Image 1 (cartoon, rainbow, N blue to C red):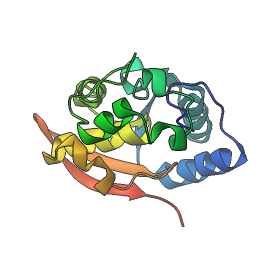
Image 2: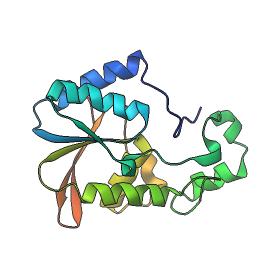
Image 3: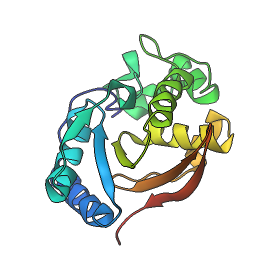
Image 4: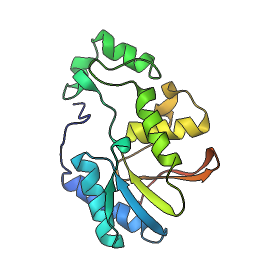
Length: 175
C-alpha cells in the first residue's frame, strides 16, 4: 500500500529503528531537530529528541510527496494505472492526480535544507523526499532516485557549501 500522506504511526519495528537512529546520531553534535508533519516522522523525531534533550520543530517543507489519489492504494492495483505509469516514467514533471510532482516535492525540501544555516540539523523526512534532495545536489535526474539507498531510520548526511552540498554519507544505519 502507498501510505503517502496518510497519518499512520510507527509500529514496533519503526520504534526500534527510531531508537537505533537516536543511538547513531548521539555523538554527531545535532543542534536542531526538524520533522515533517506526518505522525511517523514526528514520532521518529520525538525518540531522537528525547535521547538528545532537544525540542522538535515541524516543517511542512519536509512532508511526504503528495501522492493525491494514489494514497492508500495497493501497489498491485496501481500497476495498471496509466497515471501511475506516467508518474514513474516522468518523475520530474508528472503530477499525481490530486497531488504534486516529484519536482515540486524536491524543490520545497531543497529550499528548506538550503536554509538550515549553522549547526547540525537533523531533518526527519521520507525516503522519496530524501532521495530527491540527494539527487538534486548530485545533479541526477529524479528518474534516478531509486539508485540511491534510503532505508527507514537511516541517516544521509549533507555538508552544505554555498549553493551546493557534498554528500558525506548515504543510507547509514546501525547494523
